[in-house]
Image 1: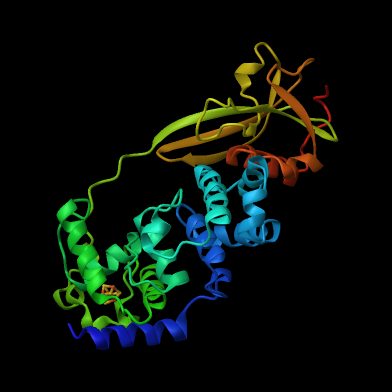
Image 2: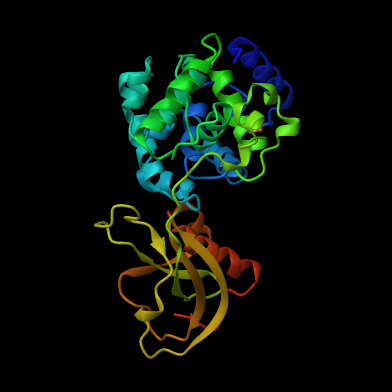
Amino acid sequence: MQVPSFRRALLRWYKASKRDLPWRESNDFYRVWLSEIMLQQTRVEAAIPYYRRFLARFPSIQELAAAPEADVLAAWSGLGYYSRARNLRRAAQRVASEGLPATYEQVRGLPGAGPYTAAAIASIALGLPHAAIDGNVTRVVSRLTNDASEMAAPAARRRIADAAQALLDMRQPGEFNQAMMELGATVCLPRTPGCARCPVEKFCAARSAGTEKELPVKVKKQKSRDARMDLVLLADEEQVFLIRRSSAERRLADFWELPDRRCFPGARCRKLHEFRHQIVNDRFRVAVWVARAATAPPGGRWFSRAELTGIPLTTVTRKALDAAVSLARIPSGARR
Ligand code: SF4
């Protein structure tokens, strides 16, 4: 492959076609870092409003470092994978006391920054020459090099990493990494690669061999399991009753949620609505019930509607409350 021509073609396309995303407005370390952490497990479209709100709430690393954890989790509520928010705050505290990192290794040492995230931040915010290799880039490189190995194998991962590093434009590594990711996200799609509109089609070995749709080779994902959740909405016109998750639970410690129906043995319940919710490999059918309970169960407290925006809520609770509000069905029948 003519690597310099490949780089030129890719970067020219990226400059002309890149999506207008809020974190691309500057290469400021905090903004790049925040966006990369948010995008670890969240789609671009879903992350945008959270990114804007989070920056408005914590405009600088110092403000994030000084914030109570509950406030940071509240701003993150609904995005899921809350260890990201806890790590972000811990990392902000380290940066606030020790200063901004200057090397890839220092970025990698921050809580929550794995190899991909560290390479993306180091290249985009610090201009350091590290190829950032996520799922999109792995797919693009496996096709460019027509690599038919199973991608989870360590040898294949090393080969992809070496190939990505060899392609990287050392003079503008941040732009180049973003261009590779953008190509994977918008053109070189998993099932339907858009080869006819691809800026690097003539450099692509899989396209020449006609194997682009077969790559990358992956082991079959574990199948999702079906499960159900029955939550109870205990509310009046002004307040909602929520239970606190135990502080012994690492992932969701101190989050608030709607109580489970099992907390109301013998109570008469009426189904309000139902929706689907996926947590890793569990596919839940979530039913929200209105209980006619004389007393609220132990372990919780009543929150006013205004308070709900300032506390960490589990994603499924936020979904259930949003749906209840949009149905105008936070009922008056289940009073304290
Ligand atoms: Fe992907 Fe097709 Fe472009 Fe190759 S030619 S990089 S398979 S979109």
